[in-house]
Length: 380
Image (cartoon, rainbow, N blue to C red; front, side, top):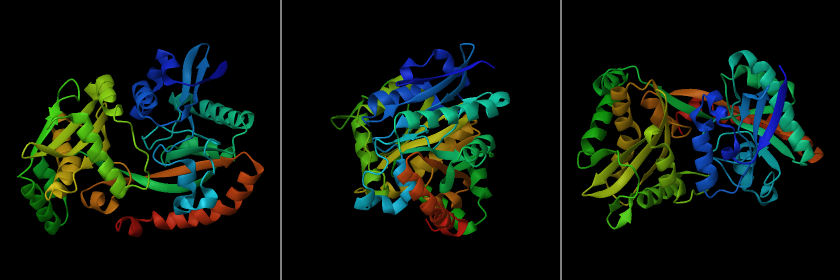
């Protein structure tokens, strides 16, 4: 196989044939280009495309980190210690993160028969970029436990791993919501779900089908309301304080409406919550949520827009699985979700980074293994 690897500093520069390699929807060109053009986050694209005789054979999204994309490498490695002044700028503008922005996924897109060759070549090329640009760190931020070949190649090339918060998913194996409800093992919890559905009856849930997000609600465009509700949730619950530009949502909707599903909750015409999902074939990914914490019934709007209404829609449209992302583990596990373990693989390219990681990683691995053990997750 005659191989050539090129770097692209915008997803829009990638050959259109690249899309044919893509399996994960957060690696596809529409998602990457929407994020790069409209998110407002300042990260330098450094995508790697391998070709064989001019035909795309392997693709790896990557960014030189300036701002968080669901946590920088620094945030993922250091956890709470990242907030200490001594680590304030560690890795910023000095690290290459091989990851899909806001996708909680790091992976190399290629055919299965070429996976070993492609993974090895692209990992070596990332190391070469780090050396040429004098970057201190390179990392694959969210590698699934099931990516056996990629994990093996990373370990063979000197990358060290620590667990990060697992993602969650629900397999839709029921023919109705009632069947899903009866599958919950606890009668007390089934009663709790029925109560959450009943208490949300004051709310009106609808699936938005319009061509754009410019519909005026209470004198404001819908996307502006959604961004305000999203920021409420980010501020209240997330350590990642990066904020997307308001233009991101309407432009993403315009570019990829057929793969997006938007559930809105209204109370007396006022929008008090929403849940946005993105489809990849029969697989749905929860993408964004937000709610108005000043409204009494918004607690019930959250569980309905984020869980129950998507489950009902997914059963109707025959989705196979919904990925609900990391976090809020106790609530998700009680509602039937399973866990998919994720790992951060990181490598130091400067002497100081290598010394630090050699000392820190063994300690961090023990800490995060404990933090993300099942007994601890069910209390989060």
